[in-house]
Length: 459
Image (cartoon, rainbow, N blue to C red; front, side, top):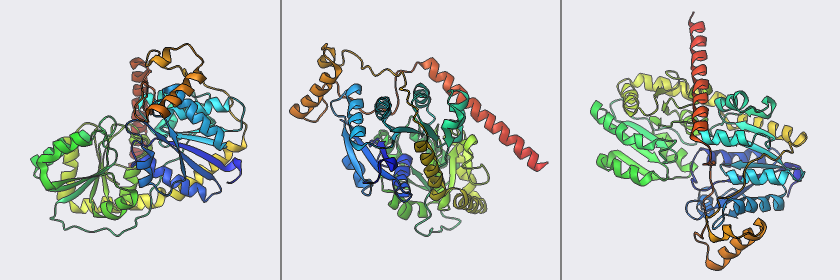
């Protein structure tokens, strides 16, 4: 194993084996490994949806270990992560959508052991931003995928500006040539991503298809992904017959070889994104994005409207259908946007550029003194979740009993067993509403600034 100073321990949620974060992690392990780092991934196991074995089938090249959280409450999950950190002894811990792992790393670092904690801010959902704010004192560095996230942490969450930076994601070069369709053929549409309705709004897809029908636009739609909304989405799309195909999750190399080369348009309905790797991948492959104006899109300017793709307001599938109608009737516009988007992606969105910057940041972090504070975050679990939680014994003994119970009565869902949370559910609605409004204001400021710059260029 390489020297400790180069060792990075990622913690990765496994509930969605395909998605932007999973794509980034694959490239991070490969690219950082080629730059002198020693990456290792801790895959979390849960009683229902987090399955490292399934995750490994999609990502067989990852060097990984497993943290088993079945039958454990929050305190015991934190302790399980802390044990792996102690065993691996990394110089950097980097949690990816595993909140308990971040808290475990803070605890471990509070013992003055030389382990730095780097956050990757990969979402703009208000509870995720609230969690970052609550843990501000513990992070040695937070890397923001989206520019708006960086602005929020500095302006509203009181992060030190030198401890927050923005590194945009990248996209891989095309692996297969595009297949061209005739100008009078139905547009080939695609959606690639998690099938969830909260942030991805995938249940906007059926009314979008009905709106296309009403406009008389012929289409073929391929949906790639899996998630909690998959069954409902399939049922609502059944009426469209073979015009809509849902493939389930596919490995990234199959998306690049079989899906993207055979699309004209990539759809994104999200309410919030930090970057949107799939948009960059689409443009890299000459596919035109038709995307929602999600919170963060104006600050990031990944897809410039009317230059690289078209956009519609969040929760307006009818407007999305009208964007597709424009491209159906004006194939010269489709070709112009495709060419401009591909030039943009190839010039600005390479993985090499992304991970050159990541390597610089990680080297800077490990070269400076630790931020040794442990955030004052409550680690207490809700009393009464099981009889074991109500016994007045030391928590370390309760943790041992939980693991013993799991070993003796089976590995299913034991009393008190929970999943690995992406974010805390304890924030008040009032606080989350304030954060959402602050994000909307940042996005409005970015839109206004962009308008001023555009006006100056035209004058």
